Image (cartoon, rainbow, N blue to C red):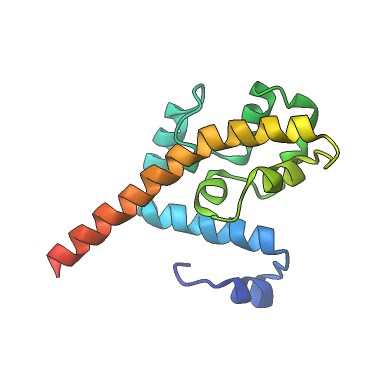
Length: 147
């Protein structure tokens, strides 16, 4: 599981959409970061059920609720079965407000709504990406010390 490539996802599992491949790869990355401890993951998810924090561990359902909470209720259900989850949103560097708007089914002509989404998404994700980058640096330093 740790070494599953996007090419293998396509060849052996039939996952051809790049977005879904990235979703699976980043989901596995999150599990690896959590040392495959589903209990710890469940605890972190529970802690952010009612507050917009720690989006790295959010489920697809949590993103649907978030979309409703930021007044995008008419688009929120479009995220069902989309592959959008916290690890994808936080860890995929190419994921942007436009990417999320497309996943939500917000038409390109709805500029104000897309701008609102981008502002809300950045407020949620940028701190999480910074925290993740810090986590990576700390663990790299610890690994070098241990060697």
